[in-house]
Image (cartoon, rainbow, N blue to C red; front, side, top):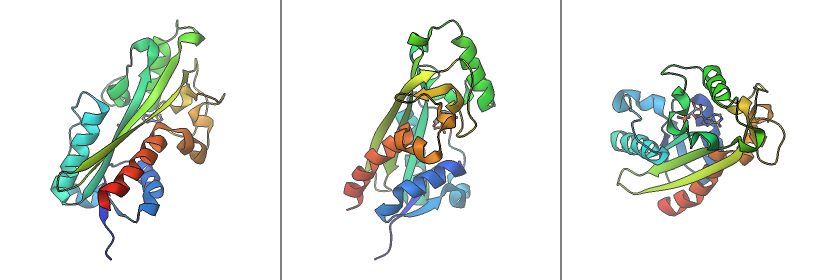
Length: 201
Ligand code: IMP
């Protein structure tokens, strides 16, 4: 039997590898978005929720390629900032801001916030969309708190300033395997996998 193909709707090579590894046992043949770039073009993430953005990416890629598409959207929600930066996490300090500029802005905004009020969470929503219009979605949350200074060099984004619940190290001090086990993306994917099984069976 021919394997069902699925396109991972991300240009981020790290994410592609992570998703490929986590989806390996579903028997899907995973394709990268790069192969279909001409057909798909640029997708503007203009939704007002993680779900809307993930849905737009997955639906657009599925419709343009005729293949199942899997897309995620994620970000950091800080309690003391009423959930900001949320969907704006990647461009918190400006349109082309670096990871460092973004987390330094966050630390500055939180400089007067005491340790007990520095709670935050990463949230990830993933959508798998079939060309016939059927889809499934799942969410993963990783709770923790924001440090007062960056520590660690692994990972990306806000990892150096986020200590996950139950640990004393920042995400940027964890190995990739340790992070995948507890991360919002790892949890969302785990939830999604069972639903994809139903969708393709
Ligand atoms: P996106 O889902 O790739 O659009 O991610 C949006 C932004 O959220 C990233 O650029 C990061 O700033 C932040 N973010 C999402 N997931 C993580 C993570 O696992 N660690 C650190 N930052 C993250």
